[in-house]
Image (cartoon, rainbow, N blue to C red; front, side, top):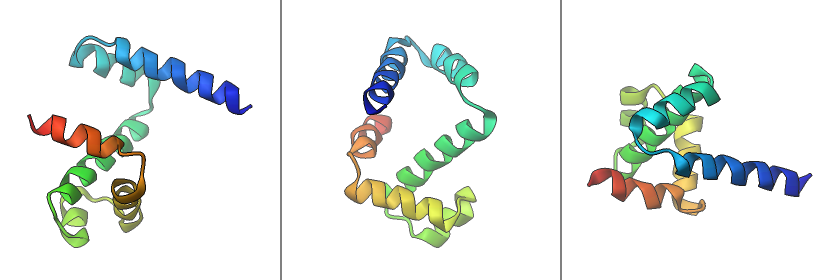
Length: 94
């Protein structure tokens, strides 16, 4: 089962890397995800940006409406995760 999941993930990541521009990306994710899933992922990325800027939880909650559990989860990923946020956040600042 683990290999099947890994293979499916690999296919998903290859599909994402095959996208050529923001419009293709938007269309793909609109087809792939529910509105709620897109909103949740977008919110987590925004929370990561604000944590990276040094904002405190209460300010992030006020700006984003994210729950304290979501803010904590994103903070844990920033501190102890696979460095995905740490890879992408500097690239978004350019």
